[in-house]
Every structure is written in C-alpha cells, then in structure tokens.
Amino acid sequence: MIKLEGVKKAFGNQQVLNGVDFHVPEGHSLVIMGPSGSGKSVILKHIIGLLQADAGRVLVMDKNVAELDRSGLRQLRRDMGYLFQHSALINWLTVFDNLALPLRETTKMSNSEIRARVMHVLELVQLTAAENKLPAEISGGMQKRVGLARALVTEPNIILYDEPEAGLDPEMSSSVSNMMRQLKEEHGMTSVTVTHSVSCAVTVADTLAVFENGRFLISGPPTEVLNSKHQRVRELLGAQLD
Amino acid sequence: MMAPPVVGAGFTMHLGLAALARIGHIPRRWRPLLNQMHLCGIKSLHVVLFVNLFIGMILALQLGFELARYGQQESVGLAVSVAMVREMAPMMTAVVLAASVASAMAAELGTMHVQEEVTALEVMSVDIYSYLVAPRVLALTLIAPMLTTLSAIVGILGGGVIAYSQLGLDFHGYLRTSLDALADTSFFGVPRSIYTGLIKAMIFGFTISVIGCSNGLRATHGASGVGNSTRAAVRNSIIMIIVLNFFLGKIIYQ
Image (cartoon, rainbow over all chains, first blue to last red; front, side, top):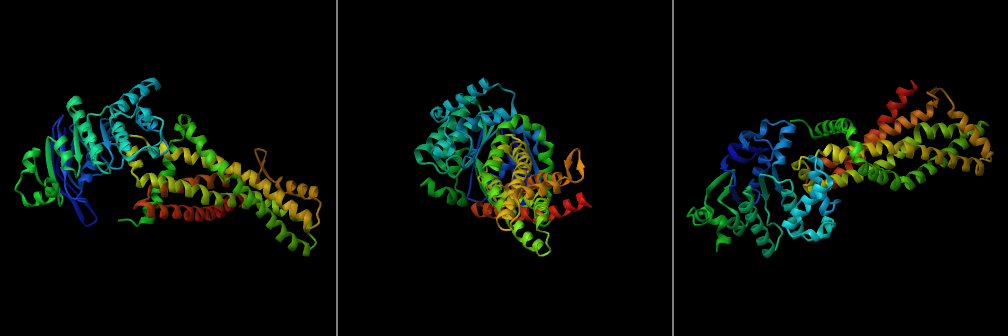
C-alpha cells in the first residue's frame, strides 16, 4: 500500500534521507523511531506529497506521488489522514467546524450528513461535549484527540501519525495509543507512525523501524527490535527499555 | 538558486494571479468575505478618517499661507480637493491599511504557517488560495475605494475648517471651489480626478492584501519569523504604494 524505493532527500548540504526503502502492506502498522531531527517526519511528508524526493520513488496505493498532478495529489490525500505533532487545528474555527472543514471543502455531503459524520468521530474520541469550543479553549490532550478525529473524519484508508504522544501526559498518551490500535484492529487502517515513545510503538506497531543518519538501522517485529543486540539501537531505545 | 527577494516577488505575483483566478469561488465564501471587509474596513475606519482629516487640514494651512502671498487664497479649495481626491486620500488610506491590515494578514497567516495550520489545510486538500487568500484580497480591494472616498470627503472638510478659521475664507465658497475643481474631463460621467483616486485605491487595496498574504505564507522560524514577515509586509506595501502611485498618476494623466 505504501512503498518507498531508494528515496533520497537533502536540504542544502544536509542529506536527510539517504536511500530509504520500506513497504507497508494494507492494514499494516509501521512505527518509526529515532533521534530528534533525524528526518522521521520528512518521510511522512514524502508519503503525503508535501515534499518531493531528490531520487527514488514514493508509491502510495500503486501511484507514484511525484508524478501526480495537483488534482491527482488532492485525490490521493483524500484517502489519507495526517495527525500533526501539535495538532495544527485552525485556530478561529470551533472543534465542530475544524472537523467539518475537509468535508465541506472536498465533498458534496449535505449539512446533515456532515453533522452526523462529525458527531460520530467526536464520539470515537469522546469529545462530543467540546464541539462548540475553540482550540484555545481545550487542553493539549483534547486538541490532540480533535486532531485525530479530523484525520479520521474523511474515512481515510491510510493514516500518518507524527509524534502522536508529544506533549501528552502518560495517561493521555496511553489513551491515544490505544485508540490508534483500535483503529487498526477495527477498521483495518494502514498507518505509519513517527514517535519517541517505546510504549506507543509496542502498542501500535506491526513493524518497528529505527532510523538514523538517513537510513534504517533495523526493522522488524517490535519484540525483535527491542531485544536487538545492535549497539546503536540499544543506545537509542535504551533509556526507555530500562 | 535564485535570491530570496526574487523568489518572494515571484511568489507574490503568483499569489495575486491565483487569487484573481479564484474570484469565482467567492459566492460560497461570502461569510469570510464579509468578515474580512469588517476587519479591514470598520476596524480601520476611525484611524483612516483621523489621519485624512489632518492631511486635509495640513494641506489647507500650508497651501493657504503660500497662496495668500500671491493673493490667491480663494484657490485653496481647488488645491486641497484635487490633492486629496487624486493623491493624498488614496495614498494615505493605503499607508494606514498597510500598517494595520497588511501587518495583520501577515501575522495571522504567518502564525498559521509556522504552526502547520496551512500545511494541515493542504493535507486536507483544501485550496488555500481560495480559502485563505481570495476573501482577504477581494475584501481589501473593495473596501479601499470606500475608505478612500470617505477619507477624501473628510480631508476636504478638514481643509474647509482651516480655510474658514485660519485663512478667513467663506466655508461655502471653499466647498464650491472644491467641487468645481473636481468637475473636469469625465469618463462615463465620473470626473477624472475621482476615478483616478478610486482606481488607485482599488489597485493599492489589491497590492497591500496580496503582499500581506504572501509574506504571511512565507513566514518561517517561529515567532521571530512571523515578526520578520509582518515587518516585510508593511515595508514592501508602503514601497509599492508609493511607486505605483507615481506610475498610475503618470499613466492616467499623461
């Protein structure tokens, strides 16, 4: 469903992706861990077409993202949801309007259909009471869940999570991870997650990959990666494994 | 690799054309359009009128003293009305709008950009030119001539107060001279001085809003980046207003 083949990307003199390869089959969950600033989020931005690779191919649902025109890219993005690290909710819209926005802008759904869909996803993230609040009036954890609801409201086949636990307390972080797991199990959603949290990775991942210096150091089932004898992998995950 | 100012100028022109190409989307964006017109127009009105009142008074005072040396103080109404309608009202209104509205647009869109809200819109397949830019550009393009008209009236009246109180002229005589001065060559019944001012105001409004949006959408590096983009929006808008004012006046009057 998502395939990266030899993807390279540099910003100025800094080579951020240096021949990245992976394949995420339908319904599968890939979790990418690695040090801050290593380029993990850059991978997500290539998948959703916000960045173009200098070399290599990014294939999503058998379409080469780099070859899509504007309308093709919009069509592809309608099949994808993206949870931003800091939620990125539109600050002047209420929670309801934030969720309704992609439906109003990209579908021909009626107001009643939009309302039903929005309230359904708000129920999923247990935030129906916050529908009329502005993003600034709710907590960071609630904003994250609204961000998740917004990513789900278009019923995408693929969802990309950029540090879903960032800024959350352990209880809320665990709640969001469980929600991600539930989405995968109940809706068969394909996902790629970038995270620093081992507990999130263990909860969500079918495949766990550790990324540094533009390449994957290791990838495989979470238990295999977490028990790896690879010294650098142990250093990167070590503090959290202990 | 092109220099950043060249890239910026290219992006600003692209943004202006993209906004024009999406004017047809406005009927389904009437609510944000009215909201922007309220923000640009009503919230700037008192400052614009206050500034132009004093511009009219300054013109009347300085021109009145000079004209009086040649015994021509009765012509002060002519000079003030022509200067206000053709030049000062469009330009000073635009400068106030650059300082208040272009800066607000740059700060608002810049904050959205650095907080990834603009990226979120792109990811959701929302056309940012239609959703964010077109209502702002059209709002200021429509509001600027309205504010300019009110500014010119207030400026001429301010000049009249000075003509009466400082130069000892008859107020009604001043107004009659002012109105006579505007009744020159007409274009579909509209005096040239008036349509010159209104065309300038529309072009200034369009330019200011496009520059404000462009600088906002190019903001990077957090709060300091938003500050830089806001400063650049005001600076670039004022430079463009002055340069365009010269060329528009030359084109229309040559």
